[in-house]
Image (tube, rainbow, N blue to C red):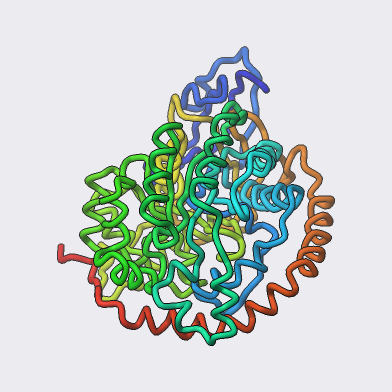
Length: 496
């Protein structure tokens, strides 16, 4: 690693994302030492000429699933319930090699599209393993991204978790889903505890978290055990809360309250905790989150893809909730492009009924959510170009058609940029992408391995897929009916 480097000649995005003046950047020990007027940097250190570049803080993915890298394009007209019902074949049959490969695919795509850190909720069946989590961490380290890996866990199946679903199935299907079981909660907790006690990836910027996947998918005892474990090891927590309307309805049936309120009563909601999606959070939920210091990852692309709705991002910001932006996994959003996630988040804010332009997400604000906001969710000192912050930087080619002409940096980052102008990426002061190529990764060989793995998994999961195809119409019918009975109709854009 070059300990000290002076980057010269570039336009540099300001922390408020409102301007991009010419500045020099002094990088030292993996951090930004100083942001200087042009020509005022030390002459006796190595220089890097970044003329014709716009330098922005690395985008931070507030919510993804690395295990989805091998499953992109797996479904079409799926809502969230159908995605979960098809999980046995979409994510099944993974050995250690496929777990690492899937994460590598996601990491390479993120890096090439200007992302330098990710909050990853991977899935292993039946329980997380030390070997599997190590393989995923190694995948991120080899590509060069920072990551917070929080294994997605539950002690109830999708069918057990959704009130009334099993009983609504035809008898021959009911018997088969009743035979499906999640691993005992204590076994899952022990597995994450073992991984935490032997974690060896912190020096590479890769930390471990805990993600009880969906509150309905955990017994109260299991959810409290997850919190106790996270507290013991100082781990962050993230959970899919009120992502789909059928889940919000299920919370009312099981708990008599909202999902977030129930989690709060169990002690899970605090500064260590963030909600993924939160599409059907209530105003009261947002007040609780703000009071507790919890955050929200706004994943607009996945919410549209899975017909979940529009998350109340503006209402969350007004309530004082930390909001970041995420892509979701490649089986539920189908790419890892944070530029697209910013664009869709800004677009979605304009779709609220009766919203005015004061309710919309502006472009500079959206950039801050996808950098500073998501960095806060992860607990990393990144997301803006300021002295003392981590040197996680993205260099955009201003000669690219996306930037011809350069009229407004924030507007074009959100409205125009699609990742194709990303030329170089630096993480922790080290180059990870040069000339559009990931350093240390043979992308052609990676693609060949991915195609071979996909063919192998297609054969392994053929029987599970056939069963899921039979099951899916019944799941769709029931969960949409459940959603239709949801009582809490919300208007989350209060009068100004």
